[in-house]
Amino acid sequence: MRRLTLSPLPSRRRTAAIWPAAVAGTIALSLTAEHAAHAAPPEPALTSLPPAPRSLGMPVLAAVTAPTTYTVEPGDTVWDIARAHGLDTAAVLAANGLASDAVIRPGQVLALTPAAAAAPPAPPAPEAAPRTHEVRPGDTVSAIARANGVSLEAVLSANGLTRASIIYPGDVLRIPADSPAPAPAAVAPATAPGLDAEQSDNARLIIRIGRELGVSDRGILIALGTAMQESWLRNLEWGDRDSLGLFQQRPSTGWGTAEQILDRERSTRVFYGGAADPNGTATRGLLDIPGWDQLPYADAAQAVQISAYPDRYAQWEQPATTWLAVLG
Image (cartoon, rainbow, N blue to C red):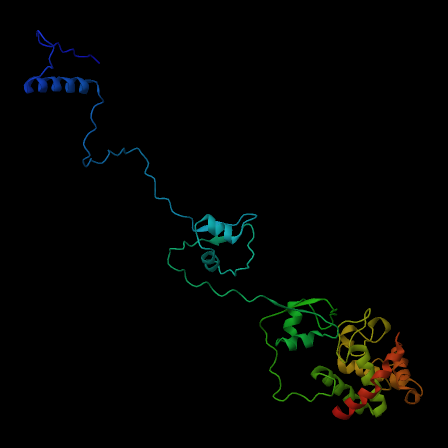
């Protein structure tokens, strides 16, 4: 910058220079002009500007919208997905019909609903989880079906079983939601002390067939105690090795086919034996044992069953007497 040097007027003595106002103003203007010549050009005044020209060849970017779905990846949780998209976890759960403890899997597509959006329509009620039943000792397919209010055929079909199939403790059976069992009778049949409805029904059948065959009360008591010891008076579809039914008779030892043994009436007639035995002479029933009615209770039962635990039949002699009195 060029400096201006002002020389004082000649004077015989040094005195303060006093500039006329006009001269001072001229100097000020000169300094201002010189400073302006070397300063940056002034910024334009802020006024409304016309819109920038738009190039026809320039692509126009569409507004970015939030995704509406998300495909689950390994390690994802609903909480992580909701947080990553700025959503409420409960809203994501509700939008997908999920419970708070629901498990999501890789590849699953979840709907994403922003928290500020209008509430989505209520999701359809999730299908009821399929019911199952773990087989316990003494269970039969028919008893399981009845306890769950469905038909025997429906349970057999849902599990790929037939009436001759064997189920074992620990097996898990699917219980279908449809095919209700036939409506029960208005009046439930009478039960004997210590027996439920199924056991009482089987005991009643053993008594009825014994009466038809002319078997004495003692023979009927032996049949009742034998069935209780062998199957808990239930028509079991499983047992030791290939044993089946009320009396745990075995197809492999000539007592009939699995389907025949599971026929309660036929298996009872085979146990009694005698001239009306459906198996003829292939097996030996109670009436075929010489002097059976003179044998002790447990010995008579053991003569038919050939059990590894012959002494266990004796415990049922007195209860069988009560069952016969109530049901026979």
